[in-house]
Amino acid sequence: MAEKEKVFEIRDMDLYYGSFQALKKVNIDIYRHDVTALIGPSGCGKSTFLRSLNRMNDLVEGCRIEGKLLFDGEDFYGKDYDTIALRTKVGMVFQKPNPFPKSIYENLAYGPRLHGVKDRKKLDEIAERTLSQVGLWDEIKDRLGKSALGLSGGQAQRLCIARCLSVEPEVILMDEPTSALDPIATSKIEALIQELSKQYTIIIVTHNMQQAGRISDRTAFFFSGEILEAGDTRRLFTNPENPKTEEYITGRFG
Amino acid sequence: MRKRKGNKIIKSAVFFGSVRLAAAVTLGILALLLLFILVKGVPHLSLKFLAESPENMGKEGGIFPVLIGTVYVTLTSVLIAMPLGVAAAVYFSEYAGKGRLVHIIRFFTEVLAGIPSIIFGLFGFAFFVVFLGMGWSVIAGGITLSMMILPTLIRSTEEALKTVPGAYREGSLSLGATKWQTVVKVILPCCRSGILTGLILGIGRAIGETAAVMLTVGGSLKLPVSIFDSTRTMSLHLYMLASEGLSQEKTYATAALLILIVLGINWLAGFIGRRLTKE
Image (tube, rainbow over all chains, first blue to last red; front, side, top):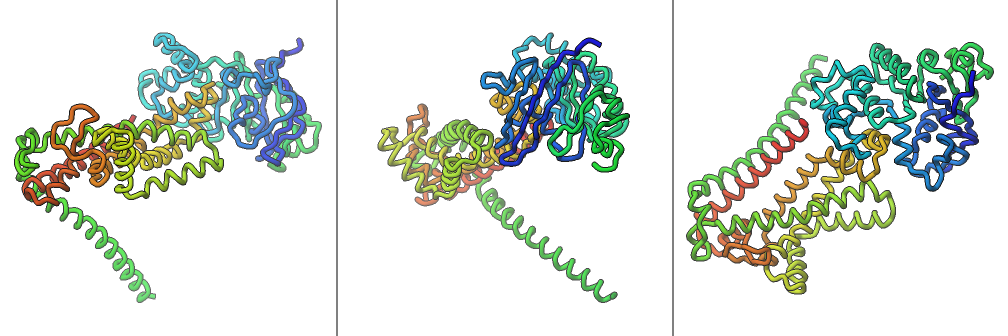
């Protein structure tokens, strides 16, 4: 198999909230068009790590990051790096669906407009394309002008994924995207993630072992701020090297 | 056992009854006041009263220039206070963080809210009217009133900003929006009804103000044209009519109109607020 292209290359990353060290010497490579699952018990730092990848932690006061962090070969915590451009290329889907309190259409037009798309026709196209991508077009094409707050949880989350796609990212970060959804909506989102992985690189935090096993190519196991083990998902789940990993995935703690 | 249960029922009935009574008394006082003013004033309201100029210092004629003056002064104060207030609130809650300086500025804003209006009037008179040479005018009064309503606007906007879920901010930023774009396009639109509430409270305070207006706007009964003209607001007119005992009829008619206008504004605000939240 040919060497896959690295999207993120993280070396010896330390992250501090004030004096508390939340991540310790994290090393990981994220490959293009892979679905990478981040698993581990609550408070292990996996969400923190995810939110560092599009610099969402910049919002947190007292957050400090050290180490070598490369995105497409560039140090994205460097002094001159454009955070806005990073967040455009690295989109994010959150734990709880968070559509803006605007119409469905406006939710999808918001991102492109930020980046200078003003042509109504183009915006219409983007709305249709992204909604089709998430399999929502047929369901809601007749009520694009209605408030996005009227959608069901699963629909709202798919709208949020569509909104994320509207600015044509390379990478999609997902922070437990199905934890607020029922099983049917969850399975739809999982199918969607697999579909999207053909075009995008996906990094997903999940508490659900089966989910990680079903949809991811690679898995990283976080434990109290460190990555204890990372690698091919099937290998990690069937033949974990670290005893802690085995304990966690077999449900002995977590 | 049975007896205790009976006790409980009685206690609950007494409590419920007294709460009801309190509510009824409050409502009753309000109704009495409204009824009193409206019954005495409304019969003297007429189109002529609204459209004519006062004569004999208001003893006869209508209150047309006073109405215009009221709108003029109130609008000026709101137009000044609104952008300032919203901008200040955005600064406090989105940008400022928790520094010492912010703490001090915030403290002074709170103090501003508690200063008696006559002090504002005195300052407005000394500074705007005399020192800056604006004379008794719509603009001097407008600025003075805007300082008075600023704290209300800041506070209600800030309260509204606080209720906007952080998830909206994150959602917007994650799409590559700047902080400024996020505030203007996502956060502030969520606060429309909160800002509106502050605006209404501010207008209410501006319309109801007498002392500060008297010292800064003057009291001319001529129709104001430029913002440098002196004029008179309804509250001030009412005060003059009542204190000089010019005309009972006109006094109550003016009072009734003032009440109707304030009620109207409140109703309108509720209506617009409901429309905004529906969107």
